[in-house]
Image 1 (cartoon, rainbow, N blue to C red):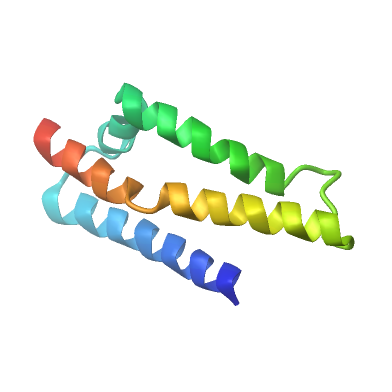
Image 2 (image 1 turned 90 degrees about the vertical axis):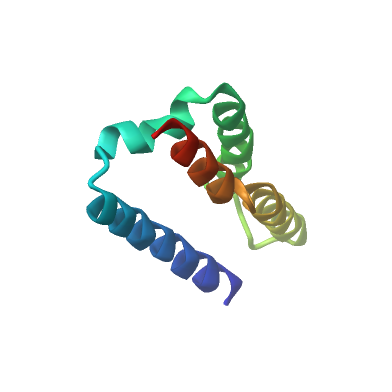
Length: 97
């Protein structure tokens, strides 16, 4: 259920991004690239994505207690670290655009 909520939130972010682009006529590539060109945001994204990578590795198994613990630990880390990143993105976007 938690993963379904997370997927819904990500879909909501995508829809919001599209809405902002269409409403303010921003260049898609430039706007998306802002977070890639901001060193602190890029470093955070790379760090957070490390936990996502650990959840989708081919040898990950949630059939064992240890595998379930690892998956949940990385999921929680990912979500805790990711919270607020989109707010920081739009703050930087507004300042630069």
